[in-house]
Length: 512
Image: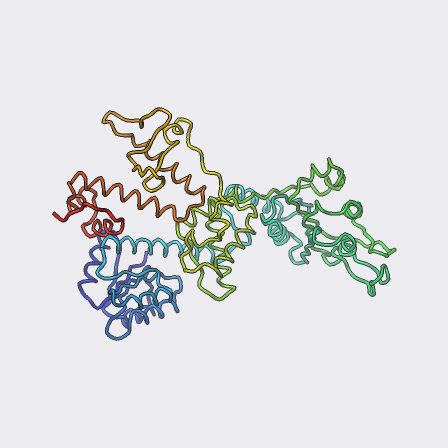
């Protein structure tokens, strides 16, 4: 891992950050001015850069511009005094990862640098993985089965039927089958049979002779002729009109066809790959699809999984589509926060990969900041319309959690330790009289699930504030309001507890 660069003309600031990061086993390199850091960028690159704004010579803002010009994905944390806040905001808009106001809480500074470090390492791994992006992305077991099938079919000319929900990438798989086949140097021709009017579809497939019908002023080659020697991909084959199914069956059976209005048979040397989101067996039973054509097409069936079956692929696909969209628009790629990525992974995404790609295009254009939070996503997603069902608790836990409320979640104002249990009248307890660990964790999970299902914004922040407030209030009770003692009991710094008490509006604390 590369070192963290610290740039500040104040030696004490550099020393404090060096020591704090050394305790975290993080390597640092310090500079007393921006010029030295800019010169060092010619031969080296940090993992994260932390810089002051106001320094003799070049400013931190100029350093930020130099870094972003050379390494746009490198996280830069700007340090500034309160009087420089406008400059900090301008730097933030210029691509800074975050800014720290001086004097800062050391624990908060280390935590922020840790977050930037994780982001930098994640971006580096994504860049390395996408240096040569494969045509189809996927690490889920279901997708690995698809890749293995493509490999086995690579030297075959056999007809393939690709099934799967809309948006799962059926045409991409057809492209891959063609690319890795002996026909790769020949044309790949695609036709969506559902998108062509019935009266024109026959001509699209087989072509027509001059004068075959009104408006046919010249002979036209159809898709079978265009794909000669290569692959013809027929998408949404389940929607093909019944009478045209008969003509397609004849081509698949003997390899010959006629142009519309033609009298000379033409030989078709074409590999056919078909795809559908419909259940062809049901279509056959309903009399809407020829059974003999179904068997001709269904030589090898390749089923593509929905996004619900490959949720572990959502992060890598999201990063790929965000990078792709940013490249097309000539802007810096947006980043998903950890919680926003978790939120996306929990969505059903009925439009599958296509919906995810469209969402990433929307994020690139519409999301306000470089780091995207849940609140920045389209309203129809955050209102819960695309949420996956919450994982149910075990039956044993349900009676204990049915009426759980966190502070502020209901009018009764009960805290974590005052949750109500309507079925048995008391919280499950262990020998010391307190609720056991598993019980309050289950209660917290239930409240989180309820808020997520209701589409509540910033669930992590809301529950986190309530949790911190409960901890600090309890510690202050034990120390009779002495906040320094409470900080020691909680294992946090004095500056941290002072800031938290102010942020959370906690009363009754005293310095001694």
